[in-house]
Image (cartoon, rainbow over all chains, first blue to last red; front, top):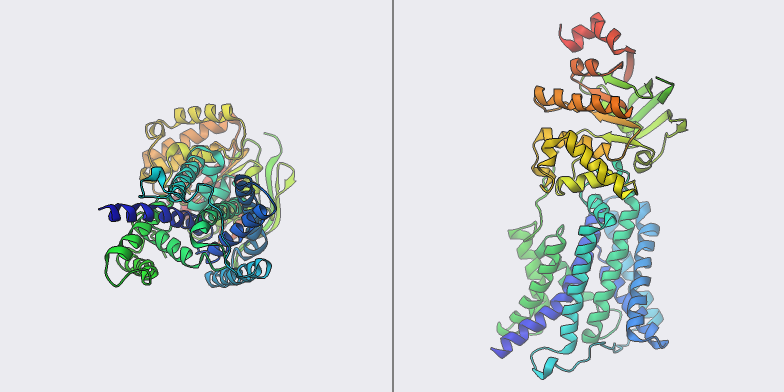
Length: 292
Length: 238
């Protein structure tokens, strides 16, 4: 029983990271209708920036928030410089650019900080919570930070005018223009926020998976799985999907013979295929019907 | 009535390579109501879309002394031109309240926005009963009223109305036009109306133009147009 509970809690902790990645993916998907394959690499680069800040002597939390600010600005800049000119380009052009970004960010990070594995500090410590042995301080911290992030995002979209304008842009860009919303800037803002959320995810997972240019590869896959399970147009679904994928992955890895550590990633891919086959809009997504 | 609020000269518009409007000239007087009449596919909706910068257009568009040709849709809206689009453009996953707030997105005066919302809920009691309801669940008539109310939240100088009678029962059509007439009288709001329902439009407007396959073929006061033999036979059915 203890093992079961332990695995569920650990699953929730990593699930929080998947939820953050899924949220970032969903935000960009809503803005430009395609999956950002470079999301994980953007998060990895942000984490390196945080590491660099700390190398220069910044305290953890200063580096944490400075990294979020830098990532936000970089996300806006990527949209303005790279994707704004591509606004009317085809889906395929977007995908090619995403893959290019992926490769560029990955190799630039390797060039600047090289490919050796670095340790990344946890602000919460690694001892177990209240000495219970069930869940570590860092895992608890990951869950708490994820939940705080969600509440902030929810409040932003629900109660602020700019949040309302962003939702309107995602739902109906043409009508949004007609009421005078500067749709291009809303899309850029979405990119900035996605980059900032990704930075949080990267900084929280880095103490677990260690810092190196390929650290986000599998995390991104889990994030895609979470977003697909929850529904690509549902932020709430992305979060629930993230936590579910984290828990399912851990339980299957522990209790299903033969799955073990090696096949854990396969579970994410199986989930993607299963959901796309059985319920393509995801558990919480809306079915979009288009008339031709 | 003073000079024109909107002057259009030689307006051409294109969908890709296909030209859909050919050199239209027309005006909307300050405080006036102008109707564009024509059959399905004549270019009425395209005219409004060209004015709002939603399709590629050439020619001269002067609004309130300012040339607005070639501006982005959101910038046209910010100048005080509210467009009630074909299909109503409802934000269907949002509540009625949120739809109205979105209409006022260009404004910063919170108190004024709240006051305008109350005023519009007074005009449209059916919307008042459904403030927290998802807009997508409203009936066609209610969504049309919501689209008009949302456009009014911009406090526009000029409203572009694309077939406000479309798909509505005759009683609701009368109600919608009645409210628009009141707003025209009380706020001096100018309107450019596109309609297939020529009877209702000529009754409502003071100026009218007739479009056929992207060309203006006739223009004048609504009363004169309504008396024209050919218009009556082709569009009014008597």
